[in-house]
Image (tube, rainbow, N blue to C red; front, side, top):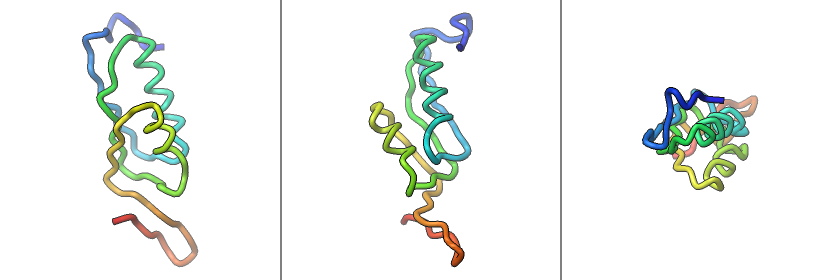
Length: 83
């Protein structure tokens, strides 16, 4: 649990994560911040596997999700990105 010594209801936090697939890491950070009383401004992701359900889980919590690169498909032919 995040310490209330460092976080309070006056804090507004942007979560940054390197990789989004199923959303478990970002959801864990969100829960910790909420338990500490902080607000979550949104979630920034470097690479998102859009064919998995992580984004939907986070958006279902009412969170704004921003990704630098969104992968739509990974196959033996290569990696495809969303526009």
